[in-house]
Image 1 (tube, rainbow, N blue to C red):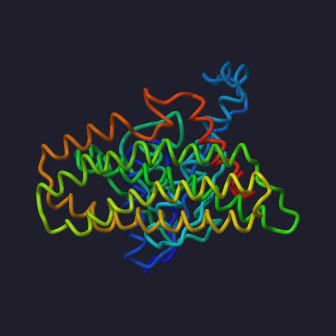
Image 2 (cartoon, rainbow, N blue to C red):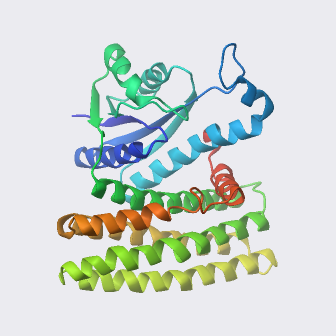
Length: 342
């Protein structure tokens, strides 16, 4: 039976569905996952349509491609962690994604490649639609192809909800890594400006946007469909309120740290308490509530949920997002990356 999966991902909406399916598959097999992303080379090349952009805006290219790659992998790793699936992340720069996929599978000693085929090309990451056949034709390692063409509205809505969880998890992952680095021998003090930026993210995203959407659309409609889940929903809504209290406590710890009143170890303990709470909270929603709404919701419910979450997704992107917030998120994830993920 397969024990180690390589899961190539890109930055299309359908790729997030592939991540979820791969995690479910790995969990059933008690297997581990290596998530892989092929970053496009942004070195100038003859005949390259993006040569001018690369020459005139190298920082934008680096942010859009390298930063996006790190973000995708961090979110995939967070998704696996929420389901107790062991995972690692690998990235390489390549203009031939199928060769990069095969090279990564061999290097990581994977015994199965789990990838999507949705027939679409993306100039922002791997072109899985065109690359899947090439992997199949050239791989000596078994390949399992998960079709993700034209997912139904419920799958899209749940994908958005899970992706928002992954965004929050990626920030927490970055903060925890920064804390560990600061406590290591020779570790540098944490940057007060970055700490306050991460607090701003927690307040602007889960507290102000994500939780209210869940309460108003997901929880309320599930209560209207069945009383079976009332106790669980009551607890989750209590946790939403507790989240405000925990963020306030975390903000107070950051203030004390910046004032020199507590050390890095005490601040790290506060971050770990908050992260542990959020892992449990998000895991509870995904293990109990999302399966419940899949059983109970009708087409009108899904249309309303999908519209609500699609219109106000993670504030990093979309019409309501500004470039400063996007750059803040990217900086958090970048600074929280391990040296081998840089």
